[in-house]
Amino acid sequence: MSKNRLEAFSDGVIAIIITIMVLEIKVPHGDTLEELYPLVPVFISYLLSFVFVGKIPSKSLAN
Image 1 (cartoon, rainbow, N blue to C red):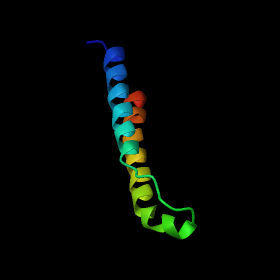
Image 2 (spheres, rainbow, N blue to C red):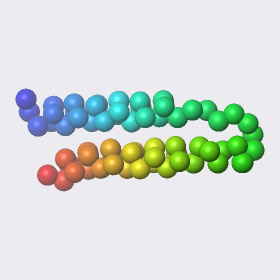
Image 3 (spheres, rainbow, N blue to C red):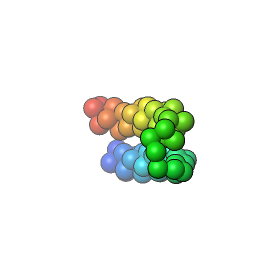
Image 4 (cartoon, rainbow, N blue to C red):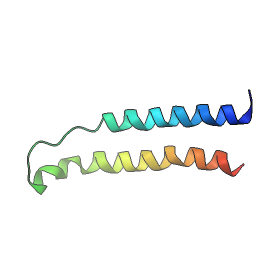
């Protein structure tokens, strides 16, 4: 398998992983800011996961 095909495959897998992570975020119920506070840890964990998963392609492109 050529390097380009492997990079395209890994990009596709990472896109699927990020999509699944987004689907796990629940829609908040309510319209006040106080009702969003319980979701802050979920958003922070998603942001950190997105950064770590997003670093994988950047490392493969650097080589």
